[in-house]
Length: 97
Image 1 (spheres, rainbow, N blue to C red):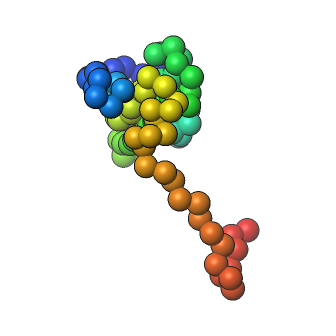
Image 2 (image 1 turned 180 degrees about the horizontal axis):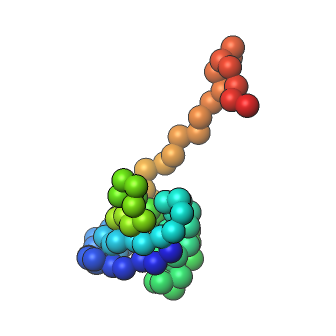
Image 3 (image 1 turned 90 degrees about the vertical axis):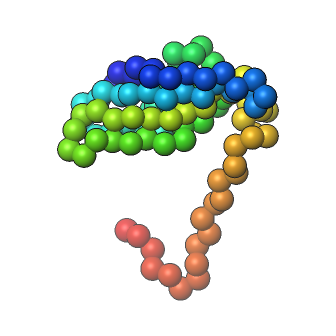
């Protein structure tokens, strides 16, 4: 996977860098986790300070676009980013096998 940055905007008020970029890959579209780790390596920060917002894969292609935020600290990320809700099992619902 290869990342290229298209736009970087420093947002000092929120303590983050807002990044837009392109990605090239072979096989399946990379997961958010893979993109998060690649951006953390590129910006020399821990992966927990990177929030991947969107990944847009080109239909049938090996390229795509992404949006991400690189925070100055983990505390800042936890303060700003919305919390993910955990899915609860519904009683009587069929389970996936």
